[in-house]
Length: 210
Length: 162
Image (tube, rainbow over all chains, first blue to last red; front, side):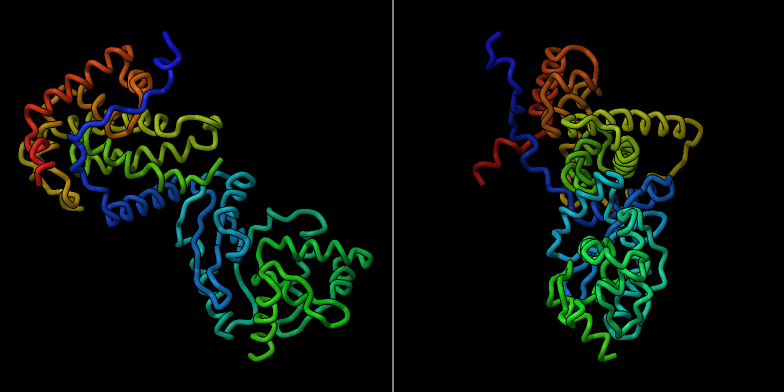
């Protein structure tokens, strides 16, 4: 046999099926919703996600059965974030809005200035060790106030770990919900933010105005 | 490994066309599609990297279609007067009933090989692995199927003139 004969053939074409319509979107939506419901009932919908609109652009929300797992800004590239979740948490990822309904509602209230704290089950598995300790302490910084990276390092039990606090904030898997935007430089300047410095300023002014 | 949602988006329509070609456009095809993707989701984390995802999905769909037919024939025996309910979705927009009627007249193996080769785009080696037998036999079955369809399914010649 020649190599040409053993190479993978492209399927022969026939005009017989040329008239077949594309599967219409309503049917696909219906079947997708059924898959989500079946997967959820079977306990194999490991990561459910959706996107929501916000004053800071579209936000990706992803949740496991334990709770909210990830909030991501568009600049983080939602497709890439989902790919990371697929490899680090589970590839059983489906677009399924229901599981993040509560998170979506609380975020909407927050952006409307009607909510000062989030009351949600969280899944913190994407953050471990000292970074996770830092994230847990972020919730202690009250709405409308700020704390320095040094102060957060102290609160997390390691006053010298100022740079590590910066890293913990930069890799916060749950921005907005865990308020790393309230951590600023000791000299009062805003510092970096996973959603961009403008987003950080927007959040801080939203909180000071409310 | 990419998120399963991407697999559903990329291959969902192909699997539905295959299910409809094998089972007819209606509730049975929808059931087979749903069973296929639920099984696929369950097994997905164990899928070897570099696997041919289309062939994997069609393999599952083939088994699910057989299950659906078996379940239907079991149900069908004792009930003489079940009304012929139309699919809840209605006949999928523009799906060609004449084509389905022609496909339905084919022996199951011809129908399956035609669907898996021409609608799913699988090479005959993969088609043979799914339906059994040799690639050459799969190719013959598909060729016979296409020849039969050309006789019974009208209108393909005219289309170019319109």
